Amino acid sequence: MGLSEDLERVGLQERELVLPRLDFETAWELGSRLRGLAVERGLPVVIDVRRFGQPLFYTALAGTTPDNVEWVRRKNNVAARFHRSSYAVGLKLAAKGETLAGQQGLALADYAVQGGAFPLAVAGAGVVGSATVSGLPQRADHELVVEALCGLLGRDYAELRLAAEPPAVGPMAR
Figure (tube, one colour):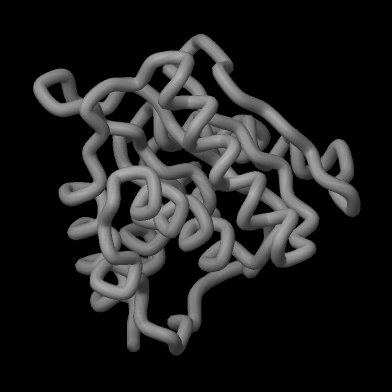
């Protein structure tokens, strides 16, 4: 499984995982589902669900640090700017041998293309927010959000998950 295969699969995830709405209740349900998965598996993660400009759900679990908070902020900025998952943006850049700073002139202090921020699209409205996880390797951060969205939307996670073998791509962090 390589970069292009993951990028193709992430595109499918982004097209298929569309919410009927993103209100306070939906954010709570998604955030609670993410937290439940993390607690059940003993994962040290920070979880953030937001409409752009408005946090709706936030939690930090044991084992996280203030650094994870910064990773969440930077990943959210990528999802907000590009309306794509931070993992997809990172894969696309890696496939071209480019960086976000070089291609877009964006400061790395404010943008992180490591996986974990997933765009929250609403049917008929487009991308209006993001769900973000930080604390695991980037691919695992991304997939935790996808798994929770599948559960929330009644979708079979096995049909949308990334293949088991991770591609060789950049830093594994956060």
